[in-house]
Image 1 (cartoon, helix red, strand yellow):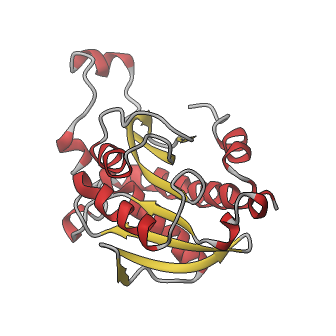
Image 2 (cartoon, rainbow, N blue to C red):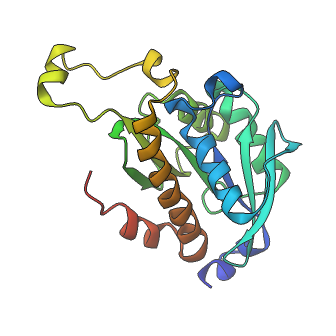
Length: 211
């Protein structure tokens, strides 16, 4: 109900954009967690992400009484902002109120998620591209943890460095995909909570989980 009073935002579609790389070779890689999330939400809503518009493939559904556009940019990760900005322009969306961007986060352990209303890209090329294209860090993001849960001795073995590009662009192991499968259901639930009750309510519910 709160959304209806916010300058008619309930009359505009809510944009949910998952970041990733197009192409079968990237399908089950950690860096494509955002694409996986969009596909999971679409599956649960009974729609298929196949319409092409604004440099993205999209599907439209209704969630919590509001029209929702699910989108996967057709650009590669480091140009994601071009598609996000094009979608925002096409639907006359307010990036602060009408947009959720979902992407992978190496600094969060696989099995976790975090919702933030604003912030720096923190080294994520897709998030950096979105911030650049929108000209602002004021956009809602849901980050899906993809970092390996390494014991201290394993971290010491690699000098404390976190995994990099090779890890993010390599297919996930079966055990990791099982964990991701459970997380994607929580991501879908969190997305509905954001649309239904706003980001504050969703953060209270989903950010409290222990990493």
